[in-house]
Amino acid sequence: MAAVGILTVGLVASSGISCRPAPAEDAGERTIYVQATELDARRTVEQDPFPQETVEEFPEYFGPGDDPFERGGAPGYYLFMTAEDEWRIGSYMFVPQEVIAYQGERITMEILGVRGAHHENVLLDPDGEPVAGPDGTDIVFTVRRGELHVIEFTTEKTGIYTLVCVTHQPTMTMNIHVLGR
Ligand SMILES: [Cu+2]
Image (cartoon, rainbow, N blue to C red; front, side, top):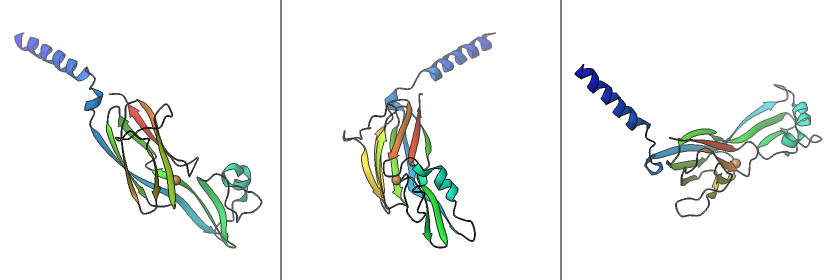
């Protein structure tokens, strides 16, 4: 009986410790490795005819509809004829697009400019407000192809932080899902 009693006390004590929320400042560090990039495909019209119906159905993304050689619509998307016999389709993105973190973590994010000439970015908190870095200034920065840009911030709120490339909307946004401890 005595042994059972000790075991019971031990379980209660350990469960009490594990349920205590960790202080936000003790949540640790996390490094996230990111590519600023794009995915695309090139096809000859012999392989696949130019998908004119996509341009006409979504002109806000892929327009204008009257000149397939002109690149227009939303800057995050493209679909256009590159030559008389070839077309190209694609979109810009961060890889990864979805990231998980915990509240109170000190995040280091390394963003490598791989494809796309340049990306103008801002980091927003779950309320849509710019996030400040360690020096107190808002995290607003440009990544050019060939550069590695490092940002640091702390996930003070739970919810979804977003890294937004304002150059390439609506496709180029990373969601950082910050969970409570
Ligand atoms: Cu971009």
